[in-house]
Image (tube, rainbow, N blue to C red; front, side, top):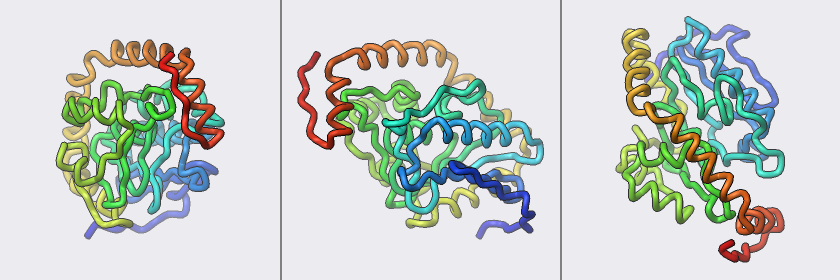
Length: 264
């Protein structure tokens, strides 16, 4: 059972896209655009960025938990509104390009598709309910995963599994994700946040300086070539976006029909 702390009124802050709640040394960030399955538009990008800035800048906060609530995590980019401009400190979605100073746990219930899955991959640890659904379905729309998955998928998953997800758009179950090392813990539906907070308690019982520096060292080692990786991601995203298939895939999505691919 996780610890509980007295809650001050100012510890809970809600905007039209994100709710933040302070529990002890943990900042819980909840995406709240549930009518759109938490699809990320420009307003949500800015709200996530502000929450992550708060986590990094407040010395009383030692760890963060990012969740989408009890029914969903995030369906990725809002294809109609777009996700807005990358932020200065957080990059795309305000988080996937961030050089974070503190640990971040993803608590996943329901869909984590496309950019939502890429947000999960940008976190340090993952707790997933059995109803969680992971996928990179961009290829089904003539698009390409361009928010980190082209290089992060092969870091958190075996290379052949990463290639399979990127080229088929097939879903990865929580059990498979745990077996392959992406997910740290699988739990019952409705319990992802509770279990993520329990994991946060274990981490915050340790030295915050040691935990932060250990993660920063690991991140610097594995991300040594990230500038090149982001450049390659942008290069191939631009190639895909200039194709006829890309235009057809997006049109088919909005017209709710199967795409008619030409291979051009």
